Image 1 (cartoon, rainbow, N blue to C red):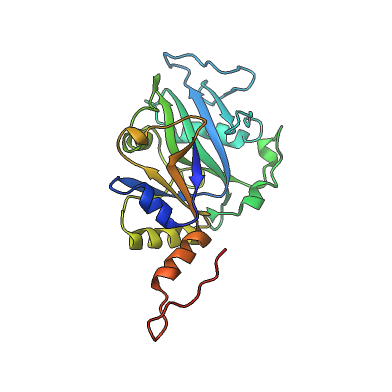
Image 2 (cartoon, helix red, strand yellow):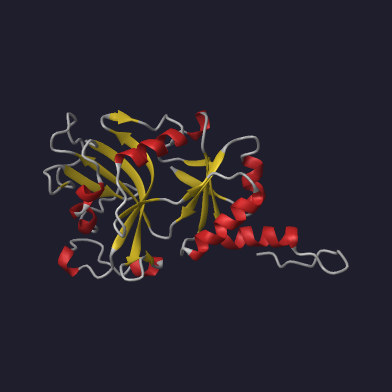
Length: 250
């Protein structure tokens, strides 16, 4: 599922008028899907066995890009630590997430350019210089059941129940469910301070909040910081004589 770009927060407010929505940090990394089946799962791994790697506990796992490119050999460090954040009762899943470069000492997100310095395939864990953290934001399949038809609020609850955050390795995408402009403005500023690109705004409840695989949907909108800032300044920047000052458009 892909988000539709927006040029101003007015598009977001118009689209979600009278609807409940949620805002998430838009992380500056590489979109990925992680597929996993535990050794003792009643389900069998249905992907290509050549793409799957064995986990420490004998399960099978693989990582794919949004275009179904196999990323497993690019991120062996993620697969090696997978069992540290997958709960014992979680036997199978398909996880939608962002792999982000991570500063181990400063405990913060690094720029996307840092992530791109990693080798693209046949990576050996001992040679990894740029560490990554997985930021999970959605769940497509859990314990033998497809959950794409469930509302986002319910999928998020299932996501948080199925995994355990581990600092610098696995985290849930930071989110905020406030509906007011000033709340969104504050949250956007916080996202930028956290080295993110902006916000993802998503339908939270109802039939339209289901997950739509391989589709660019108007139920997910992305807002980059400059676009929002221009709109916010236009609303609030007033000259002493109460005339609006000119704002340069981009």
